Image (cartoon, rainbow, N blue to C red):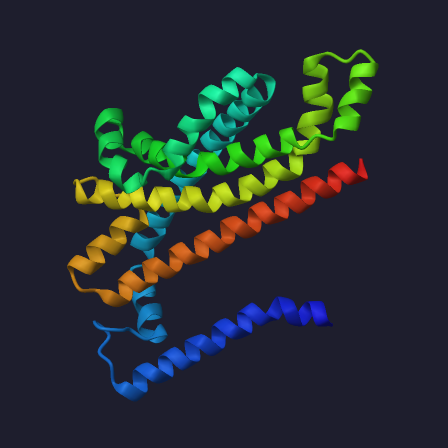
Length: 254
């Protein structure tokens, strides 16, 4: 019973917040072009549902491609760093530099250098998201228990046998945690890149819907796009969280 109440608590809180929001808008008679109420936002969403849906699909396509590329790049670099201290010393500082560099500052350069719009957006999103997978996977590989490593060495295991039969399986929970974080970060990177690309003339995704709505002072439509982005982020986090639980349950059951 308690678990069911906890699951319903976010929904109840959201409904109460929406009701208070709508009540405050009515009570203060606030114009919709200043602060729209939930009913105005719902109406704007319905009227622009086709355009907003197309924008969401575009943004999710960039996010999915970026998450896939981040997974491949992050795992590859993490394995290379675990296999060679020289690679770790060479790669880790530059990975940190890329991570702390604001993507909004380098997105125009990436868009110019890459040329192809969709690929440029994916590269921008990868810059934001790959470090979560790299750092978590590398931490999992480094956390392999020394007693198990000694046991594998005593039995004559090779470096690659240790990596694929011990270190990588042990790092799986770390990788899945990084994947869940990278999913939401990829969405953030995709939206930031779309904002920059939209300002430069390449209209794409929900970010462009927000820009266009702000230009036309269609504030309810802008809020609708923002709420869709929030829902997309929650959906990505929930799906990857479910995948994490499923994979770990399968591994423990096996």
